[in-house]
Every structure is written in C-alpha cells, then in structure tokens.
Length: 594
Ligand SMILES: [Zn+2]
Image 1: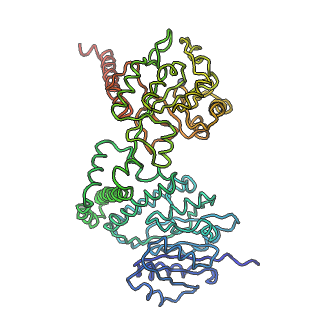
Image 2: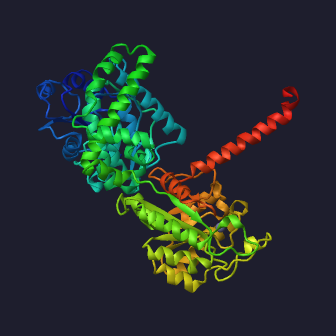
C-alpha cells in the first residue's frame, strides 16, 4: 500500500488572534482526515496582539508549527511557510478563512492524478460577519466571480482574478516557480498563479470545496492601505507580466474621456489624497448598511475613493502622472487612406486624396507636434508601455497602389513619419482586379521591388489578403489561404515577420477574427460607423481607423487625429438623417398637418 500524500496547511497571519484561535484553526483541527496525514504551519507576520502566546496554548491533533517573523507582508510569510512545510502538497488558508468540514479531503482527492494542478475552491462570507458596506461589496464580488468561473468552467488566464486562499499547490511546482514574489504588496497570489500557468500548470476549480471568510477589514483600511498597495502593484505587475497590462485597472487611463482625464490629473496632483472627505459619508453608510440604497451609495463612494488612492499610488510608482499616462494611457489615432495621387478615370472618387492635399495634411500634423509611427511601434507599446512619441499618429494605406510610391511615401519620408501599407499579395505589380471586376477604373499596384525598397525607408508593410476577397464569404480552407497565406507571401518577400493585417473592405466575422488572431499581432478594421481612438483596452485585432475623405479640411483632419473621427461629419450625417426622418414623417402624416 502506498502512503497517502501528505498535506501542509500554511496560514499566514497578522494581528487577527481572535478569529484565528477561535474559528480558523479549530476548523482545520476538525477535518475528517486522519491527523497523521496533515500538518499546520502558522507564520505570524509581526503580530503585536499576543497571537504567538495564544497559539502556544492550543492543543492540536496534528503536527503544528508556529513561525514568527517581523512584519514583511503575506508573500514573505507564505514563502517562510513553504520552507518549513514538509508536505508534498500545500494548502493555503488565510487567517480569517474558515474551512468546511471536508475541505482538506477534497483538496487531497483533487491531486490524485500525476499531473501537477492547482486546485482551488470558492470562498463566501461566514455567517456572523459584522455588517458593513465592505461586507456587502465583498459578498457581491465573490458571488459574481464564482458564478463567472462556473459559467466558463474554470479560470481564463490572464484575464481572470485568482485567490490563493483555499488553493492547494504541489510543493514541487511552488519550488520550481520560485515561490511568491516578495516585491508584490498585493495581488501576490494572482502573480504566482500567472507564473504557474505559464509553466503549464493546470488550474482545477472545486466548487464543492467551500471555505468561509470572516471579513473584518474596516473600510478605512481598505480604502487607504489596500488602495495604495494595489496601485503600486498594478504598475509592478504590468512591468513584470506584459500580458497583464490590458487587464490592469490602469488600462482605463487611455479610454477615459477628456473631462474625466482632467479630474484624474487634478486629484493625482493634490498634495494630500482627497479621500478624507469620504470618511464621514462612508461611516454613515456603514451604520445604515442594512438599507440597500445605503449599501449602493457606500459601495460607490468606496469605489471612487479607492480609484483615487490607487491612481495616486500608481503615479508615484511610475514617477509622475505624466509618466503613468505615457506607460498606460496613450491613445492612437489611425488614419486610413487608399489612393493618394492624381484622380484616375473611372476609379471610385471617394477613395482618392490629391498629393497636394496629402502633403498639406502631413505638414499640418507635423507642425502640431504629431509623429507618424508604425504598427510595430504600437505593438511594442502595448507590450511594454515604452517607445511612443508624445503625440503618435498612424498613417495606413490599404491596397498598396503604385501611385503611393510617387506621392505619399516620399512626403512621409521627408517628415520622418513611419506608416503602414497593406498589400494584396496575390496581385503585386498588377492592378486592382477586385474593383475592375465590378466596373471600376484601373489603378496599378506596387511591385515587389518597390515594396522591398520602401520597407528599408521606414514604411512597414502588412497583409491585406491574397486576392482582396470578402473573407466572411469563404470556406475555412480558403480563409486560411487568404489570411495566413498573404502573411507568408509577404514575410517571404521581406525576409521578416509580418506584424499586422487589414481586413479587405473592413469585413470580418468571428471565424475571420480567429484566423487573423492566430497569424498576426495586430489587425485593423475599416468601418465608418465604428471609428475612434485606440488605447490599451482596444482589441489589438480590431483596431479602429478613421477614413480620411477626399475633401477633408485641415480642421476635419485635426478632429480625426484628436478624437479618431470627425464629429462634424457625423453631425452633418445626423442632420441629414433628421431631415430624411422629417420627410418620411411628413409623407405619412402630411395629410393631417395640411
Ligand atoms: Zn482594400
């Protein structure tokens, strides 16, 4: 008979003697597995409330270790616990968590297979938790979080949160990944989970392995101390794990509208955190929190206060508010052009911009402090939060017309602007056959030599399919040919990886998106009903563009660069729609009015 896997329960604690001694530990003593199959390691993290003395008086049925350390936070405490523990499997339980009667048994059973997994169960609030705004907020969060996990059948990294409490991890996996990162003041559990996941460890959700939290944190502490450590951690975590950046709470910085940005700027720069004014109203909400209106109001106030504290702490960590904006809050306008050159007979007039007008536009933007960047620059910033100029703008040209070589590209080069040209790789050196087939006039396309030359001149080339097909109408095999095939053609031509793709006609659906996601880092849509600025939260495979119109004034261009669209055009369109609606109403009800 083989010996059963031994389990070590690691409990870090700081100044929670009462709940630890009267609730947390008794629930671990009282498990339905033999006492020789597990041990308990309590790491007392600088408690000043007599925890160690109280622990020494307890009579434990299983081996029981008490380790003391000066206050260094939960990461250091858990690492100490890992070192001391002798079990093959470690179960982490926080000092305010009360285990269900068969929790240890369920965790042990979930590691029956040889493959390393992290098993984790849900947490809900323990009965008897004193009512407060925070209690209801946490309860609500737990409910939503576990409902989300149940609905998708587990965790999706790196987007989902992860809690280490009520999680069991093989000791070998913890040692292999180096344990908890001691620089993380918060989210240290998520950070560890992310590293384990990257190592290929699977996460197994055990909905039946319930644990209950006796939540005692006062809202003041949650607001100030937790807010500060979360703000700082978000910066550190994003730097350590670039794939976390779009999921960090700082990612909203680029999405935020102008008025809110100003408000953020002001409160981040105040010498003192302006959350003191919230203390009294939150206290009132706490006292009256049995009323749902007060719960909601209190919840909202906590959210506002917490945001302020987090952003201030994050700005401090980044160096300044401006540095934080540069790292997380950049916004990118992407201009879409097709043909820049003299108008050619029979071609779609709306798709042509004259060389004179184009030059005026580039000069105007350069004069306003904009710098033309490439798609790779944006991809790099998304990943690392570095490398963008103050006011970036991305010029993109679909279809790769030969006239660009005569007109647009030399102008861009003169101003030192990067840009991207999306070419139809099956038609290089030919003509716009896809438009000609529909009766349009002929335009020549760039040749392979021209593409190779301009790729050395700061212009980046991206794929625009092989034949400019409507990708949404293709079979899976043909779709693969058009998307992946065009990327391969271009990579072969340039001798380099191709970073981005532009959907022909802007048409895409789920199957097209999925195929593009597998083959490229970035992809651009073209949809005049969906224009705007790109930021960290924008899906990198559905990047927005704004199409520069043939007769755009410099004001219109300024709007596109500033907001990613031309609101005046929309206004005109709206007015047009309104008068059309009026006409329609009149045609129906006209007789009554007369
Ligand atoms: Zn096109």
